[in-house]
Image (cartoon, rainbow over all chains, first blue to last red; front, side, top):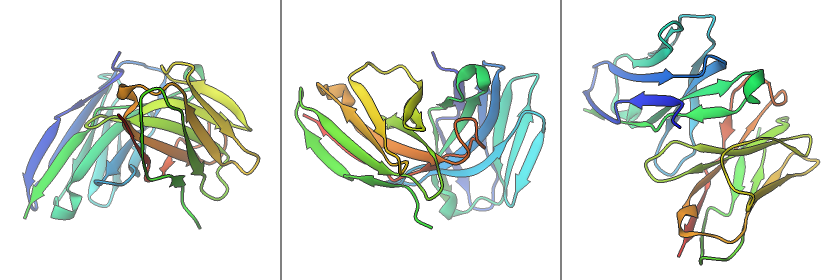
Length: 114
Length: 115
């Protein structure tokens, strides 16, 4: 049972372009929605996160858009750079009813061409 | 401030053997969770530990077990290894208990290959 569906599986963007990755979830009890960035041979690193009482959060070139009614959230990377080339995972964490267990999407491999 | 460290980084086992993976949490983090990441997949939650007790478990059989020590470090043990256990095993620590902030700080993982 895949509780968090992530798309696309892979994404190729030109330097300076906008990268957009989407996630959809099913469990309305999720209370925390982070995005992680993972480089080859490394563990995931928290990039940006949002809670369901906010519709958008921006940190530098990275923005999360959150649509609670549609149960969807997305990551926007503005002015994409070759150094952004990595795999990105969305996640959702269960609230008190879900023992605070996180569920990850399957990942999006982003390649930014110079 | 030292981050999350895991050992060993790579190991090879044969089917049926047992393996122990170790994790030192980031300073001040009292909750540790373990994940299995198969090639090309997202991390799958195995279990988490808080106050030396298992608190939450994913869809993994009992041959996956763990421990947390008083210094918050942790071990993941896998018995009767199967070929499908080949994966990157990630440890993450987080502050503030099970509910906490939700932020996970990952180590670089232990790459297990089962032959």
